[in-house]
Picture 1 (cartoon, rainbow, N blue to C red):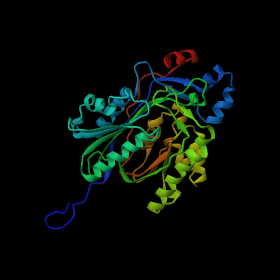
Picture 2 (cartoon, rainbow, N blue to C red):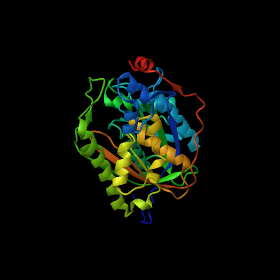
Picture 3 (tube, helix red, strand yellow):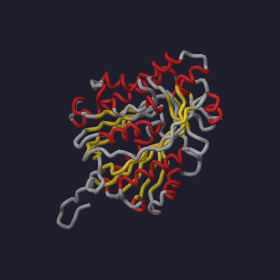
Picture 4 (tube, rainbow, N blue to C red):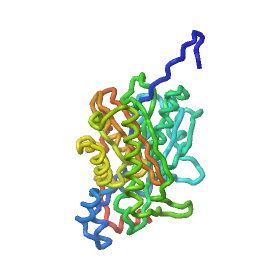
Amino acid sequence: MKQRNGTIPSMPTPAITGFGVYLPQFRIRTAEIAKHWGQDPSSITSSLGVREKTVAGSDEDSFTMAFEAGKQAIAMAGIRSSEVSAVFAGSESHVYAVKPTSGMLAAALELDPFCYCADLEFACKAGTAAMQIIASMVKSGEVSYGLAVGTDRAQARPGDALEYTASAGAAAFVIGPEHAKGALCRIERTLSFTTDTPDFWRASDERYPRHAGRFTGEPGYFRHVREVIQGMLELTKLKPRDITHLVLHMPNAKFPQKVARDLGFTEEQLELGLVVREIGNTYSACSLIGLARVLEEANRGDVILLASYGSGAGADALLCTMLKQGVRLPPDERPVEYLSYSTYATMNA
């Protein structure tokens, strides 16, 4: 829209102004699962690069975890919750098939009742899709602040390879204008790459997902992550050496390490956000928790490239620049509790 003098008003640049993470206190070690199924614990741990994963308690689901992460993000942003007028929740384990997680979050977090709300689902990249939508709404001036959430209580059939990594957790980001007092990290550009690649799926009447073996590698994860990263670098005229921190979706530790190496990134660029070793694959929250870890430690001026992946298949990329020093999340005072396989199986029955 033009102003009366004929000039076009500048649109705000979106920035992350607050973030939050929630992880269950329960854990199970990879070795414990391997022993139960008669497999070699050291071999499985080494091949995946994952030592343990989070396990949701009986009172933890995708909504409760999202609520805790969202509350933390709003507190960090230093705004009233009623200033948030959009919330998009990405998950593949929404509590209800027909009742929005986003609507429950808007009410529970006491957001603006005139709030844009929607649930998103695109396998493990629904959380980054939420970030793209909120960033676009801020940039257009449609909202001042929005909340993007990735949250999952991941499912895996007992005995399936996914059981070693499918975990639980949530991450939330308040996105507002760059000029906001709490602006931490500017979102420069976003990009997506999408195809119809049947590497992983779950029908609406099925409890556990299925996957097409080798399709989860090259035609799935590797191709899409590679394409979206190369596309972003070409779009912005950047080289891998210009990126300070690379954050990728982490189905295990080996996949992101390989794609980073193949594209010319170093282990140091990937290391800070490689959180999968200790928490497993939190699906829609996975790359977002990695980003949150980087935002805690990054320095002003650091350039962050985030690339998520969602089976089915697609990848999102976000290029961000730190506006100030990283901000630490409050320490989680709850003790970590390690489970036996029998207790774990009962909790996931």
